[in-house]
Amino acid sequence: LDETISIENPQQTVNAVGKSVNEEKPDIKTVQTPDSQANYEVETVVVELADLKQAQGILQPRDRSLSESTVEAQRRASPDQFNPDRLLDSPTTGDGAPIIARDGTIMSGNGRVLTLQEVYSNQPGSRAAYTQALQSAGVNLEGYSQPVLVRRLTDTNMTVDDLKTFADLANTDAQARMSTTEVAQRDAQRMPPQVVNLYTGGDLTSLENKPF
Image 1: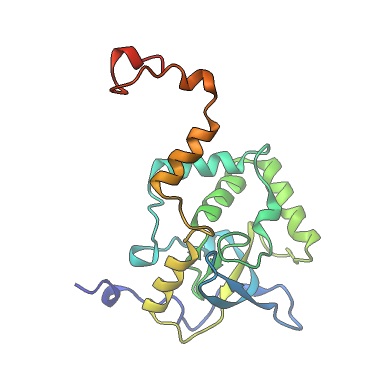
Image 2: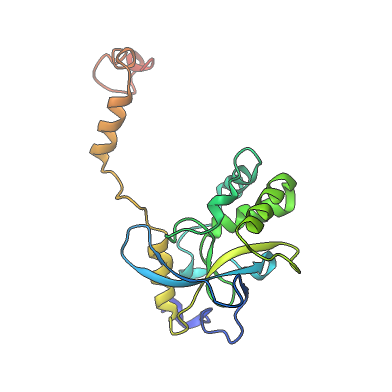
């Protein structure tokens, strides 16, 4: 069954969410996917947090329903971890302000939005730091209760398949993953001699190798 059949195209809505950060001249830029495979045009806009919605189905390559996502959002929102500058401008899709479709569906940055939900709900110190960062970047926050800086995809001809491709590319690693052998070699280099000497040979799970 073709999953795209039952999905409305969030990019082809009539009324786009968000207000341009520059009313005289829209702030339109090109961003690149982390692996440099593709470039997309986006406009920087400010929206209400409530106007954003999590991507679903084929447009969400990562399972954000997992409890680990909530725990990670809480960690990143805490004042000692939260860095508002990481939610502003960026040349790539993998970091910076979240990227949305025209109807407010989050195409890249679901985790970042989860963090901002936690910031606005439970972290007044982080909230103050974020709004200050927005103002310092020249964003007009008048009339917003929970403003969020986002980058909105500009191409209204994007299909659901195009958006799926974008979501997949936007969530790729900037660097190729290491092979199992490379991971083992890296871990071996990090292992001090006193630990290596604990290995007596044979089965790693044996009683003799328990100290190792």
